[in-house]
Image (cartoon, rainbow, N blue to C red; front, top):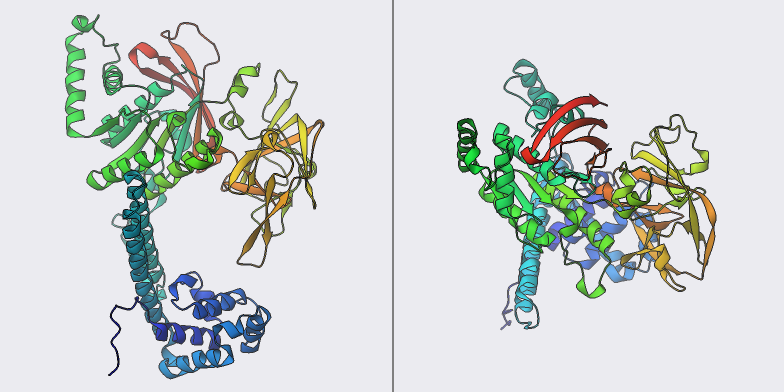
Length: 610
């Protein structure tokens, strides 16, 4: 008798894999349409994964079966997959099971089957891994919990992604029908941009809303300023406006103030009077009515205030995701960025700048996941204290340095490079001098940058250059700029001989290879022209194929700077605050002025400029 296999097989369907691969070999144009829908992990057998990868690599070439066989043979993979017989068998399977007249419907069904089995395999794999982790007594329960949550999120993301991919194919008849219905019944189909803007949460300050068009969902908004400028009061005023006038549910993480202090500021904002033990008996009837009104609003809607200290970014993610599921959360406010802790690879002990970069990226992804705006308050670095002009600029939000003017920077457009010496200035917006005799220009328009929307600002300065010499090239940076060294970012001034520098080399159209070179020599050069470019959409960039760190502020979609031109010793006295929108990924930049009365939490607007 034949022995029965005692265990269940892993979910897979090798026959469907062979049919799909054979169809792709016979109809090469299919690769263009399904390469974004299917990834190599969908295939269970390694031989099928190898064939699929080589089919994708040759998508845009004049492809035929002989070219595939040659590519497999040159990489010494033909024998590994089963030789020529395997390729012929795959092609034969597709001819047996697929009718060429209905190939599109067949392919859609095959993709669904592969996706279904792929998700099942993920569940089996992660379940087995979770069970093994449970037996390791040295692991903390918090680590296990985060690992399990990560697995669940990944599987959920794959399910949603595959569901969306299956819905991408829409007939022209359906598109025309929807278009005609929208034209005939515009009030029913409210998907136009004007309606979308009306549904956005507003700051509640007319001039600021005029510039930014409100708070877009999925955006990270950074509000920065010097200490005691009024960042927390400004954020609470925004929360009050969105809550009281727009009935929005808010979650606020106050890492500095207690819940009682936050509540007191809300009451001050509603009554425009300072409420404390000394003047509680002096409140008028109108003041008490205002307090009763705001308390009723607080009971009806929800403001969640978390004043737990020493929280990490994972705790913020978990808390907000649970609130989003239970309640209709509309806005998250965090006070403030530098007090958030991270659990990023504790063994490697990354510096604080790396941790902040990790935290801001996680906040950006959280805003996109929850589809709501996140406001985070931030301090400025110490550079502003050594300048004679105390007006904050974008570079005050980061610790990274600048690149020497003759370094080429790789743009996201293939084979396009930018060199600062070729840029012709059309408009100089501001000129400032600091204590180190550095000239700083902010350039918003140039002949080179007009063609590339990912470049918004360029900052020019005179700084001392450090040269890192490798075998094949040398890189010239300022001391605080960071480059990728193995798995972490390293500042130039912390470099030593034989430190590793990561290079990104293009292997082919679909893959890049990361190589490493050792630093052979380090030189301190004389002062030179340097430039710092504001890239809108990237977390890092390439200079001479070396991976360089992009500034922390790039993760933010909107950056608002608060500045008080007249420095006052009395922090309780009213003052004029400049609100400057330094960066707006969704539209214009500009500024407005408000009169701030700290005791009453009162903000009165003046003018607007864009």
